[in-house]
Length: 160
Image (cartoon, rainbow, N blue to C red; front, top):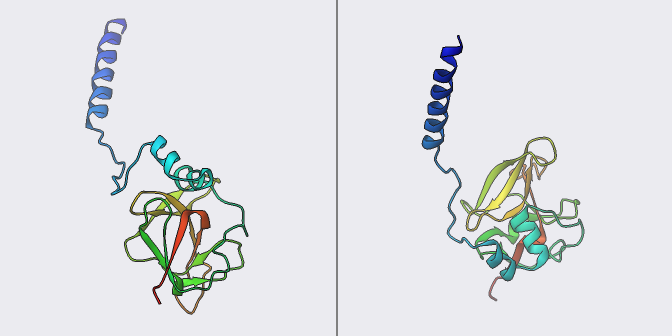
């Protein structure tokens, strides 16, 4: 039996090397990619915390909570259009909420950071964290509530 130990060791090493060699990067590439230093330079500290570190701003602090003006909300990191003002509603949660994103500009992922699965929302232009999606939105539309950190957004008013 002692004579077989070196063979088992060699076989184990070969199998582990092969499995590492076959792994491919599954990290998505975005149209806008920057280094951590470039993001820190381009964003405010709070924008960096939310967009790049998946943080959350305090509720009721966004200047967009009560905004009623017509226009488009874009990513604060890369200007990708994310939501139109006609999809915004008052959810009472303290964060800007929308019932529908601009098609293909907001991607979903699964987030387990608080111990259970939540649907994370990311900008499809730069991968920045926007917020989370819940199924308690307006029943007369989509039934969805995209709960978005206002600091992750910029607002572009419609031209008059």
